[in-house]
Structure formats: structure tokens, C-alpha cells
Amino acid sequence: MEELRKDAKTLAYANLFIPLVFMVLGIISLGSFVSNNMIDGIKYHVTFMVFAELLLYIFYFFFWFKFLESFRQSYQGSNTIIPAVNIAKVIMILKIVFMFFGIIVTIVAVTKRGGWPGNIITDEWGLYTEGTIKYIYIGLRVIVFALTSIMYFLLSESTERKSEMWFISLTLIALAIVTCVTDIKSEAYGWLILKYVYYILEFVFLYRIAQGYEFKGCKKQEITE
Image (cartoon, rainbow, N blue to C red; front, side, top):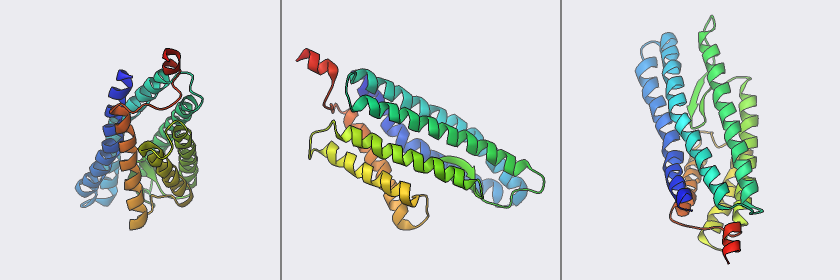
């Protein structure tokens, strides 16, 4: 359990701040490269952000998979937590696919002859383009948030009813469903607020595990008892 607590604490901060740092770098990069020279500036911006994304998200995914392995080891035999861990791994794999697909499409878009007439998007999901290809992105996002709601439902089943973690889990389920239906990347202030509430609640969820919260259904605990 000690290893799980350390991994949960590291992930809590990484999960909250790595996407934030990436978006801040995107704002700085746009202001530095694109303001004076639109065509070349976009190419410089994309080049810079590709390197930033690869560097930052290597740590992001490393910390997630390390935490999930510790989670699995600590709750072997649980009928809810082990499936939740497996779903979380699928979610991370889909996010990796999204990230690399976005990088490749973005690089192709800005290097092709005639330039790219659409927008280059930089958000917590990474770097990607708008256009007809966006429906692939939307599909991946919908799948990820649908799986996320199932994952938190399974985790909620291993918490005490009406406990803090139970309420946090249910709220995360609701926010994941809302995101799945409405695509929270919209710039409307209401959706942006909900998006940040989601990340803060996920931070609290992970940090409570780091503080020693234990779920029900741990096979090791049952054997000891």
C-alpha cells in the first residue's frame, strides 16, 4: 500500500499540472512564433509544441501506468477494482493513439504545399487539427469519456456509501457523461468551469488515495482477516 500511496501522490500532481503546463506553453508559443509571421510562425509553433508534448506526456503516461500497476497489485482479487484498472489502461492507450495521431496529422498539415487553411488546436489532449479529421478525434474522445464513466462507477462500488470518495466518484461519473455528450472542449464558460471542476475532483480523488484511503474488496486484507 505504501508504494500505491507514493504513486498516487505523484500522479495527482502530474495529472493536474502536466496538461496545464502544456496549454500554457501553447499560449506562449503562439504569442512568440505566430504573432509576427503567420505561415512560418505556425510551423515553428507546431515544431516547438511537438517536442514539448512528447517530453511532457512521456512522464504523464509513465506516472499513470505506474500508478495503475501499484493499484492492481494492492487490490488483487477485487471484482470491481481490477476491471477498473484494466479499463483505465485502455483509456491511456486510446489517449496515446490520440496524441500520436494528432502529432502526425498536424505535422503533415503544416508542411504540405500551400499551407494549412484550418486551425491548429492545443489543449489538454495535445496538439491536433480541425477539419473533417476532427470527427476521428471526437469519436476517440467520446469513447474515452464513456470508458471513464464506467471506470469510476466500478471504483464507486468499492467505496462506502455516502462517503466522501463515493460522492466524488459519482460526480466524476456525471462529469464524464456530460463531457461525452457535449464535448467540454467548447469555449463556453460553463463548459470550461465544469472541465476544471473535473480535473480538481480527480486530483482530490487521487490525493485521498495518497493519504491512505483504502477501497473495499482487497484480497490481501480479506486473507489477513
